[in-house]
Figure 1 (cartoon, rainbow over the protein chains, first blue to last red):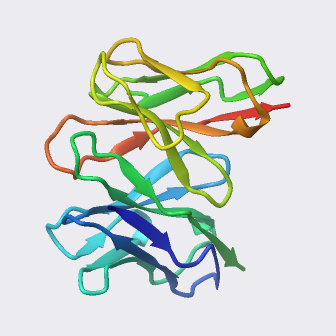
Figure 2 (figure 1 turned 180 degrees about the horizontal axis):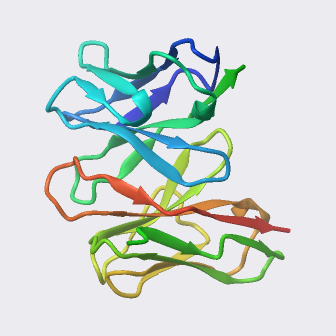
Length: 114
Length: 115
């Protein structure tokens, strides 16, 4: 069975410092993994996705994530936080069945301090 | 190209009332999904439709019904609303390629409060 665990429900960083949002997954198959961002009172926007082409995936707004099979992790990073990065972030694994359902993590709320 | 649209954006119901949430996509996607989002629980799948004319239950289907009206539209109906259905509802669609790499595209959400 597939599952996703986001290890931190809240993360606070100062503007200009690095961001690390942690995600571990469990999958019986070679997984497809995604990070989505949700700004307050908005819908979900795709940040990046891993589809086995490369273990280091670059996304929008300077975010990237590294797929580590040995650690079953897919952590999201950004070298320098910006105030506009304050949002909730979801790690998602796609179930490789005919309907490709998503399994969501419980989310990490990122706070950026001035 | 509007992507995925949802109506209404906000709704307040009294317990026992019924309503239908509308969703439409203009990306010619085959698959569509309804989720609910509750604090601390991420998004949970209510129902999905792999293609026009088919629907299946997701993780939390109780108290809901769906209709895949055509390829573009997928509606979610609450027949007798309960306070436990207070939530934010998201519709999503996915393209028709093979493999589990297809991305789901989300609408802006409907905020529903049941009093």
